[in-house]
Length: 482
Ligand code: NAP
Image (cartoon, rainbow, N blue to C red; front, top):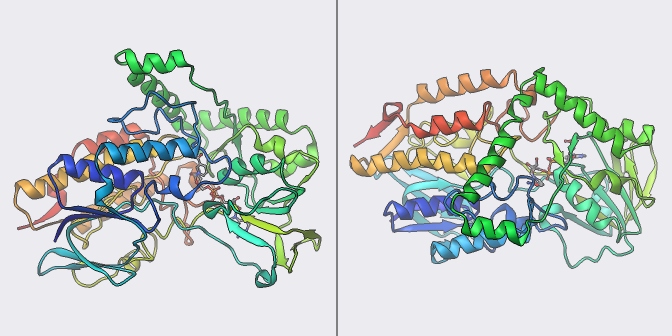
């Protein structure tokens, strides 16, 4: 019997393992469906992949890195950071890859989780941690005629590095943060590029800069320098939070600024009209990029906004009936975010399935616990995402709350801990009420919102308020099962 099974060897799973080990839990297994650790930073290795949160703050507070090469380093460097952490904390022996869960069933008799992997292997664990992220399953829309396409098709999170794009006629579907990173990288290689945009986005300058050796030396040798730098980044990012409330002064100010940036970047009024969003800034994730708008204006690029009607053996036909000859289609279409754990069949105390409990939209208490599913903890779960700051900050603080529960279980010799249903309901009523005035509720389509219009992904307030909330865990909110 395991003390804890952690599902996911990315940022959250690594964090969970470190904190559990520090607290003396020895018998831990981390499984991941991928072939190695790193989560999103393992999966996403498309050209230009980088973080849009400055890495001095996109790193664990307990493991700062004085050697970040620049403000927004690339995927390779971020992956290397997580690999180094896994080595430092001796986590690799606890990890098992190419292992995907089929089901997890809580046994109310033994108060344990019985887990089955897709290969049929069975495991038993006292505690179950889901650290599967919000963006791990690629979304690939199907178009009529797709099966007849004879060229190459792949998703940004499954980039085909063996497929040389030199001289190719390429279609990119989607213009989200991912496409905005890889389009500038491939535009100079391909013969022709047609970019299919369904919805325009707001852009903010990236302004990346390398850290000098002097700065790195300061971070390494001057006590407090790196902490101060982290604090400065945190404060700068957090100061944007008021812009995420509909109609706020900050929202109006930012809209003006971003309109100006767009006008400067795209002088052609017809192209600019296509690229001008019809929803408030922040409703969809603001794209931090300096090179995407210039890339769209290269002579070999066409921005198509009429939509895709069908695909033939060597072309995409748009909704205006125009044929675009292509030999490669790259999906930058994002991920199935709002389903959370749904592909894994998770059953709780009385056999209820999590997918049924969540049929109107995923919800949890503090994004971590679900009533009727004892000893199960979700990291970066429902309503813990942000549009303006580092997710590592969110998950580290969430883990403090989870560790308070786990430590209480051990101190009180509890067999199980289960959030009270009324507490979880009241929390979610409050949370959804807060979200009504958020900019994410301003009528745009995004991965923050599920099919029935519920915002299932985002935290409705500042990260400071999350930090405060996560510091105190009230055991009266939970059923303590002896
Ligand atoms: P995304 O934001 O969900 O964007 C997907 C794009 O594909 C959108 O333009 C979307 O259009 C389009 N699309 C989806 N389904 C379509 C369909 N059926 N037909 C036509 N177009 C379709 O996905 P993403 O760009 O991969 O980014 C996801 C998230 O990952 C980001 O929000 C961000 O949080 C994270 N990310 C972060 C970084 C970073 O630097 N840290 C970089 C990349 C990604 P609509 O807008 O009309 O839906």
